[in-house]
Image (cartoon, rainbow, N blue to C red; front, side, top):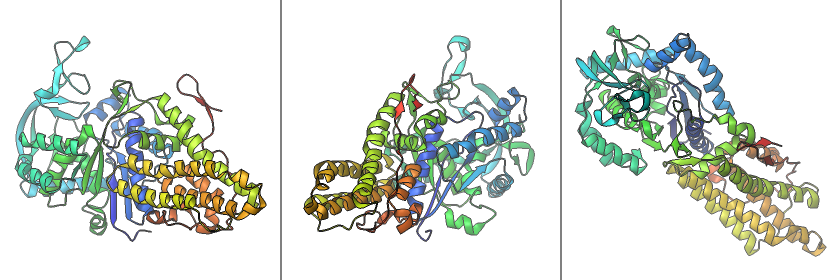
Length: 531
């Protein structure tokens, strides 16, 4: 199923100086839902994620834990970052680490090319540096410290003191790309999304771009500058290159051409790196800029951004251990307008789990399978003539499929799920209205009962396909219980853009027992325990 257009999507590569929290999980799931949707639609899909392992923060964190930075990175990646992908059911195609030889070699080749073509020069730099952000800060990005840091300037994001650095470094001529970048944002209004992010980036670039210091000589944990081993590459310049080194830049031209340019999904706090520095680097190298850079919002807990340094992080497993991976995926994709900030609370998650997943979708699936088992010996019945109510379900399914696909194209994952959920609501209303349990008591209504339960089963078939990118675990169980696996083949091979075509589930398909897709949860102390 990979004959369609290329769809290459990346998450930011995460900094394994600590363990992942639900903010990281949110980004991973969003990218995975988009990738699964496109993959199942027949597009030539590739999902990349990974870890960014160089830089001063990694060096200091490792030292504080009596390890080398490589040992620290290996430990965190193996114990926390790779398991996160399993915890959340992420179907990534590749996982890149910036300490891998394939990245280091290709990144060095990119740098050498920019140096050879005159885009890198030597200069002196003095400025405030935040180790937490791994970024030089403008005075406007600093605030007076409080408490133990009173009298010092601190980073507005980390609330920790910045350092005044003086170094002789290599610089990238980023200032030369100001006009080209502004022209890019004007000519391709969808390059940076959502619009609020585009406006922020344009405003930033219009203020003027300085050249970018891209090397460090005060420590050695990084990729060496190829022509000057006394310097290592600035961690952001190194990290951004992962999006092309992973797909073969400088190594496998055919695969690189097949995949690039891609779509970059980022948190809004790292937007400028991806929408300003990164396209300028690519322009300098004579390469295409990404198709889109989409900046999603922050996850807020108690009104504050998730943060490892402020200890407000919640581990994804705290949610999945109780509610399961599908509920995590559904909740964050449905309850937050993608591209805006969103608040997380245990109460909201629990309420949606109960109302929308357990009572809405799960109960619908159980009832339909149970009624086909009871009234038709477990075989999907042959429908008779369709009444207006049946036609309404058919129309709802077709509309939902088309609207969901259009929403995914706009990165509006929350809207796509909302469109699909119309099927859940319509089917629940349809069953209440048609009362199959009453029809079952009247032999003369046998054909009508057949039509009603076929309509419900076929509606579930479409729903299962459309929801599979969002909730792969529960939809796989339902697909099998509907007898669809045996008659139509594996769920992941169902062409997603054809999910709304009516009549695919064959009459005679054998249904099987369906355990509760979303078991009841007993709430305890704001977290809960599965019963």
